[in-house]
Length: 344
Image 1 (cartoon, rainbow, N blue to C red):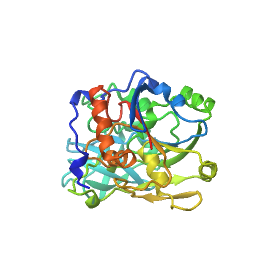
Image 2 (cartoon, one colour):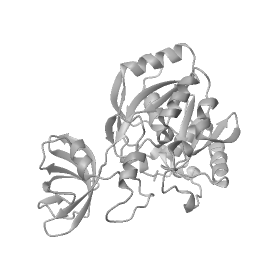
Image 3 (cartoon, rainbow, N blue to C red):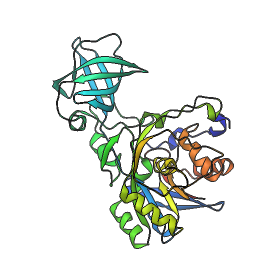
């Protein structure tokens, strides 16, 4: 399949820069059996079947962006990727150049930093003058790692406290992501309660979303794209719920492409079991789905691995038709945008 088959024209004004006034106030495009309906997200519990199993990604987004300052005065933009060891982080640093002297966090000048190893592709191993876990340090000095298409003013960011709240699902509990599983941003405790009342079961898996989620497909053919790898976990509790749903022939619906990738990464033909590891599964047409019957998702970037997954679920021509319909009806796109429910 050619990568340019996933391209489409999107008016810039449809790229959501702010979340909806309330999480549940977003719109919902419903696709089932070739039919498109325009609904609101609060309608979701009534659109699902009693007995459906909705699977969520409970990863928690770290405030992973930070600013460093050279002793010579220059500023360095950083992004935390993961903690290698106590006081050792893997990060991306912008504009470091050849400088290898001491750095300080702009938001905490008593914390010193030194780059100790170049990892390539703008990545470095740094030594941080703090014994506490990275999550604790970042909670004080970091900002939410909003995707590059969301613009915020330079300097003091009046949106950061709101973004810390809204660029996070209400059920987030496993810290480790540098991007939100955005399909989950629409859910509220009230909607979760309405799902339970409608007889819809829920389960939680974990996939820590990495930088690769924003990486466009640059290869001409999809089979030439090198997929990023991300850490995932399926708990024993989730495996038990999934096994029961499959035995009872109930539908498994993924909330977001990240949950779908976790579910499809489990070995086919085997009972669900506790599992953790790395997945680099790349789902694109034609793909034979083994586990997932439906998907709750936001509207994704052109020529991305995310839109390839949607096309694999409903078919390329239908994906194009759905997205054209969403654009004509002025749906809001990407992380802070509206949602769709697609059923196979």
